[in-house]
Every structure is written in C-alpha cells, then in structure tokens.
Image (cartoon, rainbow, N blue to C red):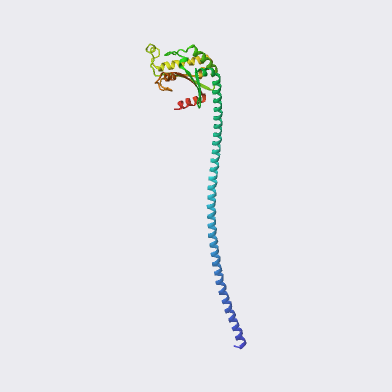
Length: 262
C-alpha cells in the first residue's frame, strides 16, 4: 500500500469512527430529552387532574352556596311576609282599641246621668264593654220582675246599645249566697233559677227597646261568681247584680267554630 492510500484509509476510518460516535451521542440525548418531556407531560397531566378536581370542588361549593343563598332569600321573604302580617295585625288591633275606647266613651256619655246616680257602672275590658246594673234598682228581694225604675233605665240603655251592631250582648244574672225564701222556692228553687230569670227579663226589656234579639244572650251564674266575700250586707249587695257585656261578634264566632271543630 502506498503512503497516499494509507493516509486516505486512515482518514476514512477516523471519519467513520467519528460518525459512529456522533450517532451514539445523538441517540442518548434524544432518549434523555424524551424522558424529560414524558416527565413534564406526566407532571402537567397530574397538575391538570388536580386543577380539574379543584374546579369540581369549587363548582360543588358554588352550587351549595347558591342553594344556601336561595334558602336564605326564601327565609327573608317569609320573614318579610310575617313582618307585614304582624304590622297589619298591630294596625288592626290599634284600630280596634281606638274603636272600643270610642264606644266606651260614647256609652258612658249616653248613660252619664245613670252612672252618676249609681244605677249602673260602665267598664271597659280588652275585648268587651261591661255595664253592671245595681240589683236593688231593678228587682225586689227574691223577685225577677223588673221594677218601673229599672224599666226606664233599661229602655234608655237599649236605645244606646242598638248602635253597637258589631257586638253580642250577653246578660248575666248574679246573686249573693243567701238561699231563696221558702215562700218563693216553688218558682225559684235556687239562686240558679232566680239569676237566669232576672237575666231573661232584662233581655226582654232590651229587645223591647229595639236591640236585635239575635244579638242577645241570657244566662245566670247564681251565687257562684261573686265580686266580694259574702260576709257583710254591703258585700252581698255588690254580688247581687246584672252584668250586661258587649262582646266583639267575631270573637264569639271564633269560639263557636272552635267548639264545632272539637
């Protein structure tokens, strides 16, 4: 082999070796880069999955908050409705109280002469007016017939009560605890019968004065609802009385409905 050919051969071998070495380095770098890329892809996929999970959790929380918000809005609307209803009830109650006060004042003015004479008392309660009639002005002892003096007072009272068409008028007879005299027991065996008879006669007198009969109720409590101890003549006189109560008609209707439902 000539010197020139040998040099060419050596150069070719060195070139082939260099190419071979260059090919080996390129493959290793590619695999490393591929591994790095795969690792990055895996990390990104994991991060994506975590973000998607966080997004799902946030969406769930948002949905729950929206439900809570809707529930709160419904509760607020309910409370506002209740407040409006209470305000309306308060207004109605204030109007009713003003009306009852005006009725009390008017009745007291109309019967002022009788009140001053002590023939009757006018009182106001929460849902009713009460007229207490002194028994001695209306009845003789142990009797149920109304005396002429009582008839005059009841006629005037009936004229006044005609105006109260929104009231039920309940007349209640009361006695002391002294038993009915034996001479009268054939007609009134006990104070029960006497108190009912007196209340019934007062109802008739009010009806004759023009009060609608469907608004009138007569009842007797005998000696069983005293306003004072039956220990003195004065206290016994207090217990012998007729109560004329003006009760709001709607309250009577409500009580009747409740009884019917039981």
